[in-house]
Length: 124
Image (tube, helix red, strand yellow):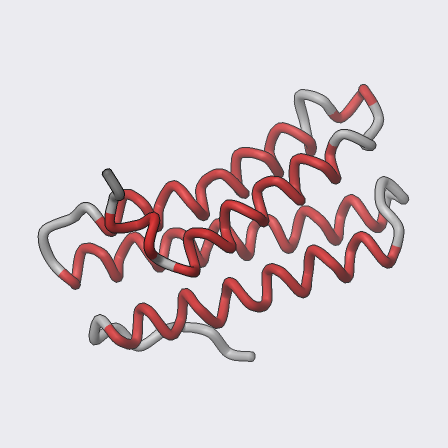
C-alpha cells in the first residue's frame, strides 16, 4: 500500500532532509540537546509531516495551506542552521549542503502550491 504523499518527490526530498538534519545535530554540543538540536529536529520533521498531512486533506486549498506551513518550517530550519554555523556547531561545507537541499525543497513546495492554485510566497 502506498499513500499519496509517498509518491511526491518533495516529500521524499524532505525525508532525506530530515536525515541530513538529524545527522548534523548529532555533532552539536550536549548542552544543545534540549535547545537548538531539539528545535531543529522538530522543524525539519514538520516539513515532511505537513506535506503528508496536507496530501490527505479533501481539497486542493487545504493541501496548499499545509504546503505553506511546510515552507514556513523549512525557513525555520534554514534560520536554525545559520545559527548553528554561527556557533561553530557545523562547518561551511555542512551548512552549504543543508542550504542546497532546503533550496530544492523550497522550489518544489512553491511549484506544488502553484499547481494547486496557490501563489507561493517565495521571494528568491
